[in-house]
Each structure stands twice: as structure tokens, then as C-alpha cells.
Image (cartoon, rainbow, N blue to C red; front, side, top):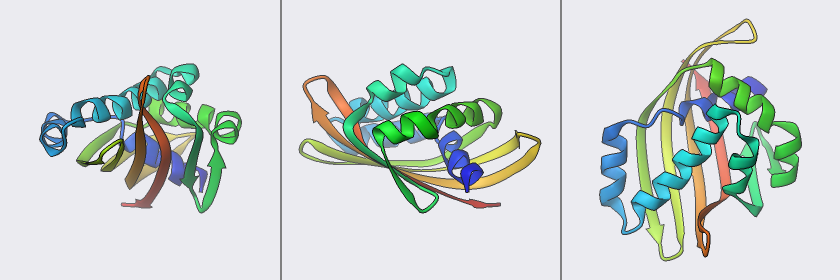
Length: 151
């Protein structure tokens, strides 16, 4: 379960120019919305837990592997492992779609990941849904849902 959830995370880390171009045309704030999601993933790749957590709203929830974690639980339980995984397993973004309704947005992405993590081969397709809200400090992630399947 852990590797499945982590593989989803790595899937979203490699944006393609096509995905960003189509996202930019989708909504008025899509560039800023995509930038917030990309910054979250970049912080994970950099091992920057402070930066990643700064992009999560205080009441953020993370859904993965059939469980729900609040922001604090995620910070203390899975964040470190997620950062290790995305650094070890390359991923490719297949699609990204951005939707916006006023001060709420959601970003749906599909990625593929192939590599080795903790001596285990990884070959998976993942899906990520992030829900964001506009704040005075910019777009913040309110919810993340990750799922994956083996290829």
C-alpha cells in the first residue's frame, strides 16, 4: 500500500510542456494553480518538507491507500517516505487537466513511474487529484487524493 501511494506522488513530478500548455488555456488562473501544484512536487523532489507543507492548507487532507490523513499526520508519517520515493523513481506526466470555479480549483493528473525503490521494482500508473483554494498568500492545496495501479 505504501509503495502504491508513493508511486502516485512521483508520477506527478515531471510536468510536460503539453500538459502545462493545455492547463494554461483551461481557466483564468490556471498558470498560478499549476504553479502551486508544481511547487509542491518540486519541494518533495528537493526534500524540502517545510516548502511542501507551506503549500498545504492547515486543514488539508490527504487520501491514499484507503486512508485519510490530516496535514499533521501526513507531515509526521508519510511525507519523508514520499520525498525519498520521488527522488528514487522517475515519473512521466501523461495528462494534466485544470478546472476552476471562482476561488476553488482542482487539478487532475495521470502519470507513469518506472524504477526501483528499496530494492523493489516499480512500474505503475498513478492518478492524482488536488483541490486548491485561493488565499491571500496564493493558491493552497486543501485536499490530495492519490491512487495507482501496477503496469
